[in-house]
Amino acid sequence: MNAGVDAFTATDSDSHEAHEAYVSIYTVDGEMHPEIEERYSMPTNHDVLLLQKLEIDKAYRDRGIGLWANRVAINTFGGNCAFAVLKPFPLQYGGWEGYANSHDPKERSIAAEADFEKKRVLAFSKLAKYYEQGGFRQLPEVEDYACHEMWAYCPKFSRQPPLAKARKYRKKKPNGSTVPSGFELG
Amino acid sequence: MKKLVMKESEYPIIDFNLSTSYGDVDTNDSGERFVRNISGSIRIFDEDVQGDGVTIGHIDLKWL
Image (cartoon, each protein chain N blue to C red):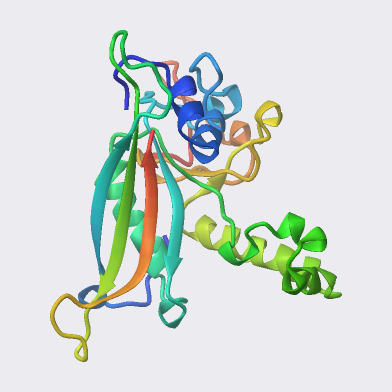
């Protein structure tokens, strides 16, 4: 949404999540990161839709409602956005890094469980796989802004780019432009 | 996209509510670039639920 002030500043003033979503795609100068531009060669609209949080009651999980709800949100608000962005993060692990030193005995107890780390990694991996099925692709990390594990879906494409490096799928078009062969305009 | 296990007639509906936040961005110059917050309640209907259905989830978005 552009009405005069640069998005880097606007998102920074809003929240960490909003800023993280923005800098995962654009530089401080508002240019798309080269790695992303390479993978998603396309006309640029700078708007980004951040899918910040999604909760489905336990009784209704495992029915695809989450992906469906994300798709409705993207279709409703993300049609003119360059990307819809999210971070696959199981909500039950909110604050997990501090469990071991938590004041809450329950959290310390969870962190002390022998398979805590194994379960945590599995939960994160499972959720990432879930969004991968919905067409989301992991973005390169942006170390300068501690921006990790952001995933993106490009509404412009009915098929999202492959997970492998985009360069190997690029091919020259007759007019000289390059478009990854796995892309189709939506 | 993964094939959904629900029939189309069973899909829940989402009620979206929008609000706009300005944060600390200076809005006095040429205007403002703002963030629009969007929240949605996910509701489902079935034979046992009358009226407005039952809320089964929630979604929060930010339009940057």
